[in-house]
Image (cartoon, rainbow, N blue to C red; front, side):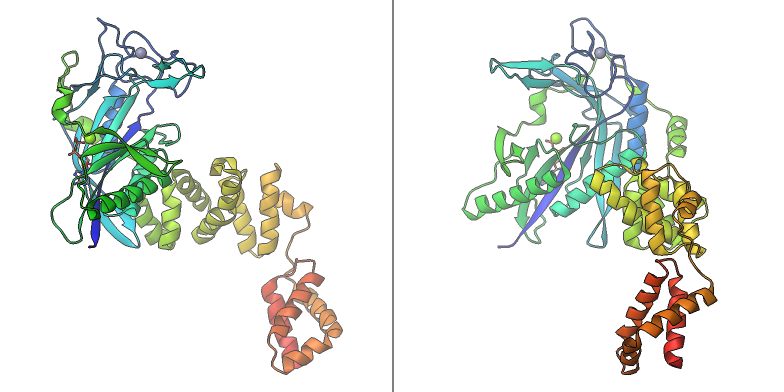
Length: 477
Ligand code: ADP
Ligand code: MG
Ligand code: ZN
């Protein structure tokens, strides 16, 4: 039997507001344990929450960027459950009236575009963290994360492979970073992804029983967790068993998941409207204002790069996927450099440095102005491509500008035909055998001779002129 997998994601992202969702504690990541808290976020009896307006604004931004309808009225609810990192024994979340719903995002996998439904985006508070202490005597609770604002993005079960799920997760991360509502660091937990997976006979219309997997902390881990679960469910089914509705915990080191709990139902949480908070009431003007202030989003940016700059689909995708690369690219192009050349430098030499040192483009040590100058010098024929690489290296390691480096290192390209002709003559005089080879049809002798002239010029002669002159002389010889 052939199977098809069905995948839906539940993505939590911590919003990067200055303060927490219901109190004025700092929302900074880290800090000494229990230093970012107050009576409200530690759930002391008698305290009252009040909504941080920025949280609503950030969530609306996310909703609009993911093509959602924004609710003019939405409500907050208590989701009741007990866990030591949840001091109130309930989480304030949104149940039946979420802030955003019915959106979609387009992903591209294997050159095909597919639309994935976004069921809803709601706001809620994060819980604390348990620290299992080194003395082995028990666990301690760090409440710094209690009350950190989150959005939960729930997708439709529209994905059919781990590639599609990863593409969607990446799309969501890119967008949240573009609109600057979250830094989306999976390692720090500011982006978390739970995956729902089921299988069904290929071509079937009826979905199978799903399981949910938690504790996934990287993009590649998401893919591995899904692949594992698909395989596990197929094995269970083939052995005549049934897939149980359950929540499983992914262990990326072991590459396997184990049952955490058999799946709870919504009624187990005893959701009810949060009595200490008012409804969230928005106006169309408010939503319109946020919409008008959204930055250009990656899909639109990519379409513009293709149309305006003639970049390849592949290059445009790579550039827009990282906001900082796109920004650097645009700043350099604005200074007059040829878009294609800028793209090549960013995706080539600059990305290489970024990968080697694991740094961002802003840390590489080259500015858009320097890159633009460098490209101009090459395109004007003042320096060769090879010399360009030398200038690039030097830009990274010094505070000198492009003109200074070219002058200091004597990299100015020789474009003077008569000067190059002299060099060609000298080289040909020393290489009669190669000339004879060329005459016999060994065309790679040409390349050899061009290389010798380049060497004679210490890498400075214009390669096109060398090529032309060597050809001419060989024809004459
Ligand atoms: P719950 O509230 O119990 O978590 P939801 O209906 O909200 O249930 O679904 C949660 C997630 O599970 C969504 O991302 C949805 O797309 C996904 N999902 C629902 N049914 C299936 C299924 N049969 N297979 C895979 N994923 C599913
Ligand atoms: Mg759920
Ligand atoms: Zn607080």
